[in-house]
Amino acid sequence: MILKILLVFFCLGYASTNINTKQTILEKYVFSEFDRSIVKLDLLQVLPGNGFQTYLFNFTSLQWFTRRLSSRPIWWHYLLLTIPYNHDKTRPIFYYIDAGSNNETNPFSIYTNIISSFSVQCKCITVLHRQIPNQPILFPSDPTGQNRTEDAIIAYTLKLYLENKQQFIDETYNYVPLLFPMTKAVRRGFDEVIKFLNYENIKFTKKFVVSGTSKRGWTTWLISAIDRRVTAFVPIVYDMVNIAKNLHRGYRSLGGAYTWAFFDYFATGSFLNIDTLNHQRLFQLVDPYYYLNNYAGKQIYLVTAMNDQFFLPENTKSFWKELSTITNYKAYIRRVPNSGHNLSESLLREVFSNVKTFFDLIKLETFSSQRILPYFTWNLENSENYGLIRTALSNINYFDSVLYKAHYARTIDRSRIDFRIAFLTPNSTLQPSGFRWNQDIIGKQLLKEENSVYKAGYKFINNFSTKYYIGFYIEADLKLKDSNETFVICTDVDIVPNVYHVPDCFNRDCFTRLI
Image: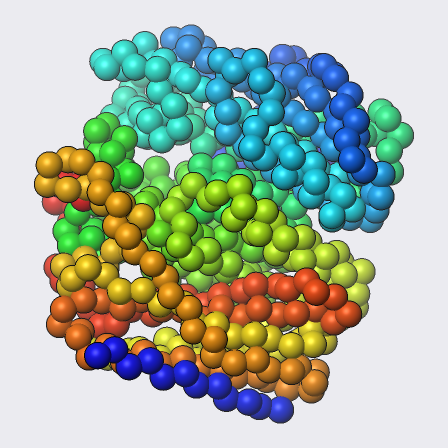
């Protein structure tokens, strides 16, 4: 028998952005102008919409080495700039980084309508920047001869950095990891959008709120760390911050293996020997963890999927306390239960309704002498057979109530802390896991005392802790005053029992198999 205990406690120019004068290698590349002459923004169409107008461009953003490195040295994109008729010039531009193939003739994606509609909802200019990265890409040095896309490109460029530095002059091997041109393309997009809006005499605020999913979420972290025009950002399904630590955590969570979703990194060997100085130098280039101090003064709304086949629910434990301190607790997690890495359109729209609320709150904070965003903190307690999460909520002047929910799920057995949407069988076939996150309503609080700290708790007793793991977290749905909108924020995930089935690994021993 599993015993769940619900507890509620009531109590009344575009210079680098780094504060340091010394630029990072990423900043040097992203803000370099050696290839400025190829940049161009060609207007293709002006498209009317329901309450907005969209400008469709073909955008040439940068040159990434030459054809000696890859089949796509010149990067181009479709870029859609939407201006709503209800545009509030004091609001920042919402900049969404999207995927897409450069072999496509269709400039639109699943996000086109979502982002265009969002412009009306948030009363802000929106940008949909597609083909980040440019793909597919063929590398002449690649013995497989494949046209690579997505993770396969990233993995191969990491391999080139780790193993082929001698092929590049003047330390330009530092610019080989694909995250470098991905980030620079976004920075160039910022520049060209500002130029166009100025040319059209459109009044606007030269600030950006950036978002993107997966690898674009990774890019969101990086551009937000180095461009001072970014005031807030929303990375979606990318929380692999502190990469080395999370690779070790993932190895132990999955019983001495890595998720099958890391196949491209396994096949190229780019995650072998992760504890060497060579890998540490790589992670210093592309891991947002090494830029944490740059997030001071920014607001963050991280969206994670609880059945993600790439990233495990515990990833945030590797960096969240540090990030919260640096941002003065203006960083928040929004967890999406019962979804894998690829969020459905309906879930995306649900998430964007929360992003809109976040957008409104940071707008209010911009023009207020007082803090608007809430403080939300938590503590995790656990032992062999129970776990307890305690939360504290304060600075709730703009909210009239909070609804607390607990989400929980159990693993198949005690061999893995595994909540992924699918796993790899011994026969190398993918099998749906059937994992479901269940929900308990903890309780609702009316937020009548603005200066009070409101506390809640949830305790989970696992009487079968020798047979399987339990994962659980608390969600707080804060309802805005005089509105039906809610700001959804969540805690870290507590695991019962809080012990791993296997010891840690070192270097090559870490990447021996996929599961």
